[in-house]
Length: 273
Image 1 (tube, helix red, strand yellow):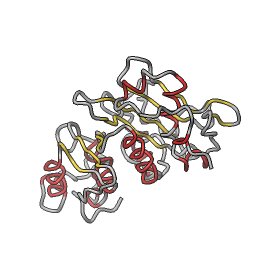
Image 2 (image 1 turned 120 degrees about the vertical axis):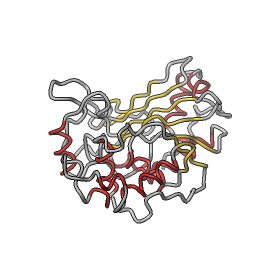
Image 3 (image 1 turned 45 degrees about the horizontal axis):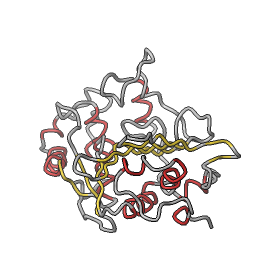
Image 4 (image 1 turned 90 degrees about the vertical axis):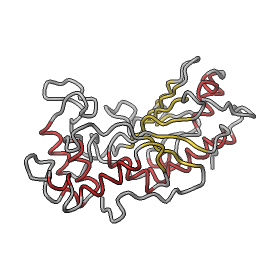
């Protein structure tokens, strides 16, 4: 079986920064970034991990210009699909750490919900600039969480070890990630992440969503996203938060993962998804 970590184009010693990788010769930096393609994705979608093609057509695109401290990687299936089935964006932090800004896993066979475009066709930027309420209601009823245009691939658990191996080769023992929504934070907890910012707020959210709490009282059915039973599930809470029940956006959270360690954090102990 092909092992991208045995590729002869890999440098003997990896740079410890995204900037350092981006400044490598093209064949070397692509060999480094090829190691981020999870084997389960390559197998499921028939991606050739050697040249990142599907049936000879390039399907994985890597944006990593020389001099940049960021990289974007996306996989499209089929190669001309409207949405990527996998997307990763990460950067160097100011103190030399690695931070994931966004990771997306979309099921290409699931229905699409246009929550990313408002009714005039303008981008909603995950509902932060505008919203497509009918599309959001349909997505919620279909079991999706805020920000999802399609159902997920349910493969993040098998992707974290691949990313940890990548980070270890960069001579780091920790990396950071920013959850863009409440359900993301809960999912990252389950995969072993801890908080650098936001733990007390997450604990407050759990407490106040429970009967007798401030947020529970606001689940009054005044919008489709504030059903009285929404507090019982991760998705229900996340939609209510997306709908503005906190009174402010879900922002300012940062989490980290130590390589090979599970932090054991759970701010919604009896959660169901």
